[in-house]
Length: 156
Image (cartoon, rainbow, N blue to C red; front, top):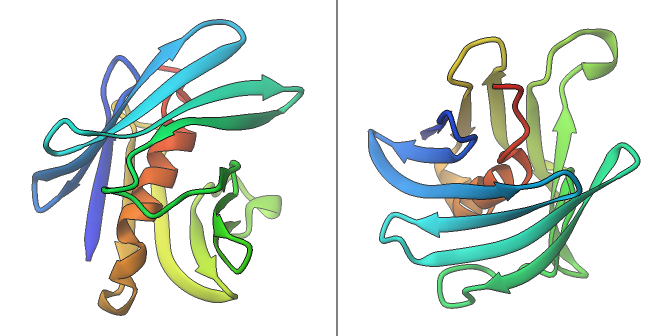
């Protein structure tokens, strides 16, 4: 299954499956922190978090999560999504050290779950998420992670 994530001019991201909206994000930006909100297709707030840049890394603080619409997220980093001490998703880059390839994939317990390809050189920015049917339980969590860590991370 393929999910397309598109950025608008306000650096919000919109996730679509077959041209139907699944989730979208908004950001309120200032020089030291960003407040990111993720909504579902019904405009229900799913996740609200604060992002701060500390040196070259972002830190994320969950301000609100709608547990009726989302797995209980215990923590978010740029490269991880933690559900509990035994369950997490990890973002792994594909050959990033030797190229300008910023594509990556998600793993759970060393099993590849989904592949993400990005076109950073186009405006608007587009991200494609490909996930196999046997891993669809992770789909919403992966989309929410992408929206949470990518909202506002553009030079547009």
